[in-house]
Length: 265
Image (cartoon, rainbow, N blue to C red):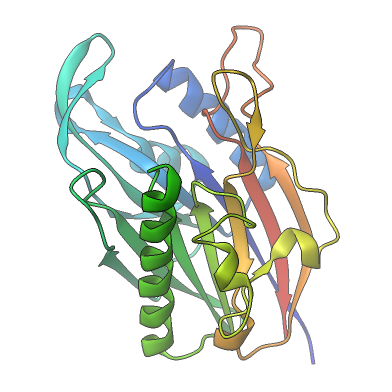
């Protein structure tokens, strides 16, 4: 049986922070080199009064389609002035999607309004379902508990949709895979698996705090229990590096991105 490949990129696109338009240009340049089938964006910025729409701009300049789940509306400082904006989820894809939906996530007064974006694609005769996530940033036990509730809600919803050829969870988890609130989902019954482990690829830090300490907060996980195909991870790599500025000191984001290629049969 012939195998079908599917390439996914995930990147936290950092709202409207920093040198926004230069960052988008760098991101588009690298995406056009990578040529993924889908790009999952977290903190996808949109401010109509400021002519800013991260997903739409990248879609136009990379020859992709965009589906967005706008979230967390509020005034934000952008290019020197306060603008009403959203920081949501977006999926860019080379071919139109089969289904796209937004799932409200459990929240607290300190961290509310988060959504998961769940998009299903056609890959040859198979389906690929991707849950695009940006889990709670809260520290300590409160954050771990909330991330666990959020992941559980996403997995229960994915389970209710029925299995796809391949089911992936990706994005900014705001935690290492070994951290409380995430680690328990790597074990039974969900048994999520890091695609970098399956590809025998080395993990790199995807975020650096103010002290320069690197953390691996962004992930692409395979859910074997929600996948009907034989899924092989051909490659997994860190891209769009947040610690490799160009000559102008600009990086694509404050997070690095990930690219994963899988094959299905």
